[in-house]
Image (cartoon, rainbow, N blue to C red; front, side, top):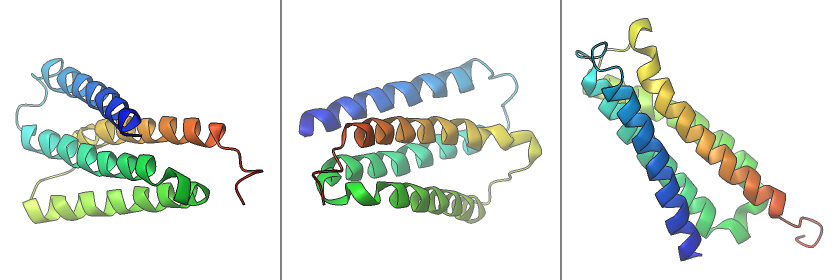
Length: 129
């Protein structure tokens, strides 16, 4: 189980770090004034998704029947907490910086969905009552 968590962590960090580097270095001339929002967005999404994925890994046997509901609730909670953090940190979010949140959000949600699909496809629900 620890091996699976370490492997998932490594892959997740690698994917998000690659996305961050492409987002910041590849388009750096466009995002000079909103670097703080980009950094907050990546850090927030990484932390939230990492905690969620590790809970999925370590509580897989107990909560596999509730994974769908947990995933939906976590998505709503993630959006709510992000916008609360934006208000607390007094960061400006408008149409021109829309992708600064949604690029890391979609990458993190993609990793969550990929992991959950793998786990649920491998589950034997006929024997797990």
